[in-house]
Length: 190
Image 1: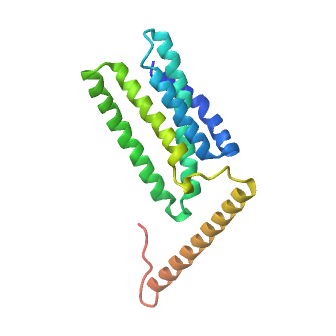
Image 2: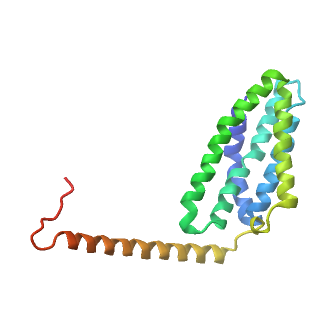
Image 3: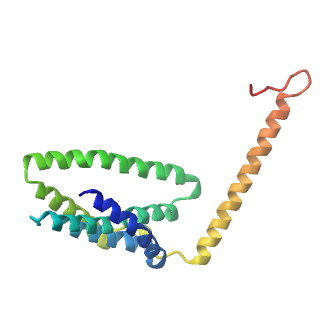
């Protein structure tokens, strides 16, 4: 039953990505939080397994817009030389949430009704969407990337990478030349 959310996410994630390109990733992420939160909170209501399954699928449709938009915002807001570190921290936070969330949900469901887990999770997602809508920092509220800006930025980044690689190769050759001076045998990799 819970895999229906993943199936819906696989279907909807490319659609969310296109919407982010067209409308802006901040807007799509906010909409995804609101949609996923509302539908997840509704999952606390049905007493029918089929209705719950339908809501689980719909929650996956909403939830799948959060991570592509957040990743895209991370690329747009992080300097190229810090992106690896930023993605590592973002991935670590996802993994901690993926470990702690089910534990807390399981504990909550053990001591109270399971429907409260969905109600509280949905409320938290919806509240995050409202916070983004009303209180998010201005730096996060960037619009849709313009095609020319994106292309120029990518070209500038690639040029910078090429220059950095060439400089590193020159430095490596210089160090290799120093190590193989008169009276020294070059080091082998074996």
